[in-house]
Image (tube, rainbow, N blue to C red; front, side, top):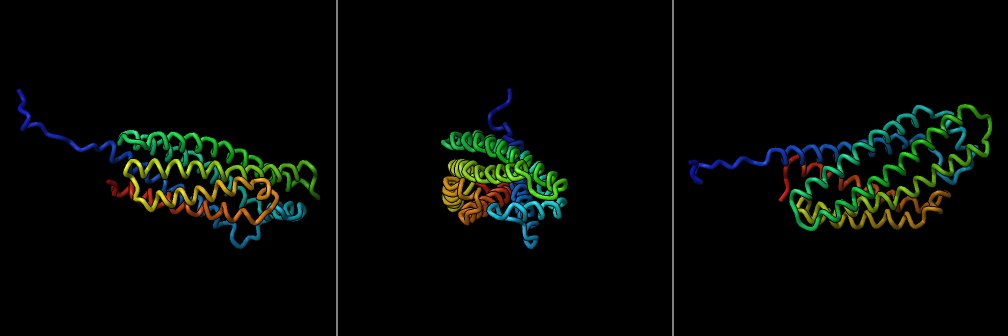
Length: 234
């Protein structure tokens, strides 16, 4: 019979490896979104309120840039859902009150993924139509306006995802208090921008409220990812 004194306790290696994978997904997602946005610096991309003739001309000349950006959206979907479901698993293993918040984050993330899929499909339609048209058609304009509306609707979906993930991670001891504050503040900015979605889709400068929330999301993802990869959690 084995005595209790001789029992060897092995560390939970599976949980550690899972945490590192979830952290790597968060870092990869933050890096890809940052690169995607950086591609449009200096290329004079049209705003949603610009004349439709300028929108057509820009997309006819920048097909490759849009193709890369849409391809990155296809990468963001598995990274986002993989991170959120992985985080939900980590939170569930640690117990506590974070599980409800992580379920909210997963549900909101699924909604965000659906909206961004529509956003990408419409953007593909815009750039494909631009190569065939000499001047804007009503269908082209409608596709561009729906693309803009999809982006505007993605802001509150991202805000809800951000708040749920930040509160879940903090409640489970995965992140420090400043990241919870960043999540609530950044998510709140995204929700506020979402309330003005019609104005944003029409080209309002209120889009920069949402951009500020997006920047906070990327900082939170990067900080959380680094902590998980390093195993630096309570």
